[in-house]
Length: 341
Image (cartoon, rainbow, N blue to C red; front, side):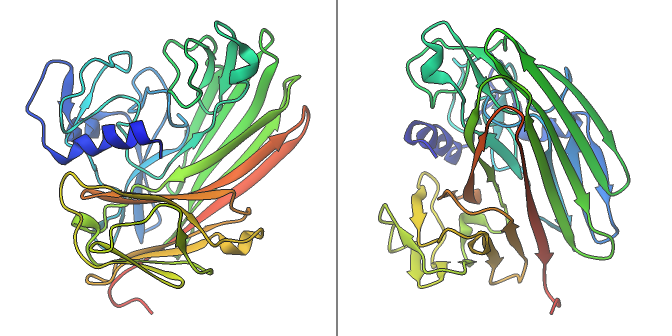
């Protein structure tokens, strides 16, 4: 989580009054979506397109999943009060409002930009999952400015229990291109969801990036009673507030609710070079609802970010694709609640 972005998102702590160009978060319920269910868990999946829920330039437009629900518990409800309607509108940022860069819940993914320095001012660079953009700043962490120069082509299909996204992007002017497939599936007979990915470099330049899933979890107001476990001993690069958060070996424990206007945030260390360390549980110890989050790739870095409306654990993985090479990765989410063994 970038410091400037963290400050912006922290503005969510104060509910906003209605202002021109903004809508209540619940207005996003009307965006086109499909509901998938396996009889145990259900989720809303939002396809990309002109009428899509998300039109910003931060998150992957494929595979936005919200309102994942198990035993009546909504794991990924809205964590913001209002949002800016027009993704080109960066001027309206009243307290409690999310700009169009971030007006989405999760799980949702973000790729780091590719070829930004090489592009030079005015040149073309790639934001995987979104498209090709013109460089108009000196900050590779700044979200690209719309419109995209090349958004590629997309397809989407769904079943009762899953959704399938395809994004093909080929940009001869920059040399970047890929064939990207994401599949979301609710596993039969289990409270489990998988998100599988395949990316093939179809361009003439390498694609070197990172990707993480912004697991916007809304299991507990203020993150009170939240307990996060890992296979390794946690350490925080930036000291966390001792009155709110306690690190105990393999456990992170929230001992008091995060007040409005306060953020807990740090890069987290302790993980090793194998994929077995990508295995976490996030539990509300009071209600018993929780989630196990696993990945099948080694962790490149971990960021932890939380405000009073949500908790986010963000493990990153590295992607390095020469032309013609393919990368596959999968996240597995297991849901559990009161009465589960």
